Image (cartoon, rainbow, N blue to C red; front, side, top):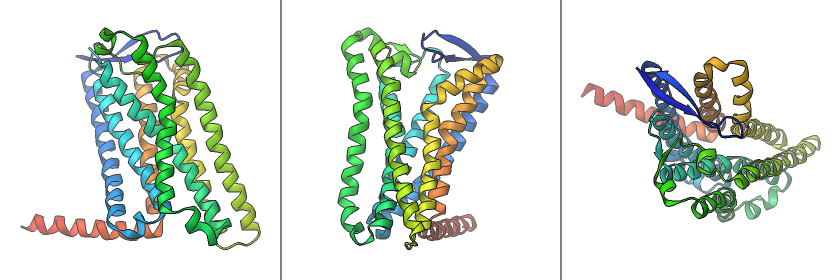
Amino acid sequence: LYFFFNLSDIGMNQTTVIYWDFLTEALIKNMVTVTVCVSIIYINGMLVHIFTRHQIFYMNPRYILYIHLVINDIILLIVYILLQALTYNSSGINVSLCITLIVAAVLSNQNNPLTIALMSVECYVAVCFPLHHSQICSVRRTYVLIALIWLVNSLSILPDVFVTLGTETTDFLLSRKRCLRKIVFKNINLEIKRPISDILFLVLVWFTVFFAYFKVLFAAKAAIANAKKARNTILLHGFQLLLCMLNFLLNLIFEGLAVVFPRNIANLHFMLSFFIHILPRLISSIVYGIRDKTFRKYLKKYLLVTDNFVKIHSFT
């Protein structure tokens, strides 16, 4: 038995290429994906729960930005599970549903780099303007900036939706297709816009992170308190940003490796998606959540309470 697996996002000519997975391979891939994604969602959900229960977190702009990062990761993983499962449906999925999933995935994916950039700026303000930090980085301003992040990123994907709704027929919107961005948003002008907007977006984010890093670096040389810790934190933000960049380079990496391994394209696509889309979400939780002493303290308490609860119910 074989399961249909379609990859039609290779190159710019949108040629549909069909591959097949054995039933066992399809089941294993879905089981691995669902197991890992649900585990990460559980960890991230635990972090969100801790955040909402303690004032020390939800009244701190740094933790608000961090938890925004975590929530976006949860959304991405849920969308990834759905797309992974629906990929093996030979009839495809409804185009309107696909558009909804793509919009959610793109927004969440692009929210993360901007959130990381804001976290770097917050570190810069905390080190270089400590007396004005509470005024500049207030809770209210943090939520306003998060709303602006969603608004700005919606401007990059909503034009694709409006162009598609305005140029495609109702039959196309009600039809069933492979859920890939190039198939659903197939207008040639959108193909030209996409890489340009991605490049401008990443340049802006990287400029912000580098600016914050070098400002903090100069502060560290001037022996300002906490500057070295903030510098290391921004380096961590840079590492996380590199992981986010892999999402934008996934197609290029795939096309290059597909030339080297032409007989394993289906497995190659699965492995790249797993290591680029899924595992970085776990790294984000571990690096930021466990590294932070305050979060780690409450996380230990939560795990201890959960463990005791499980033991009590196991005896009863």
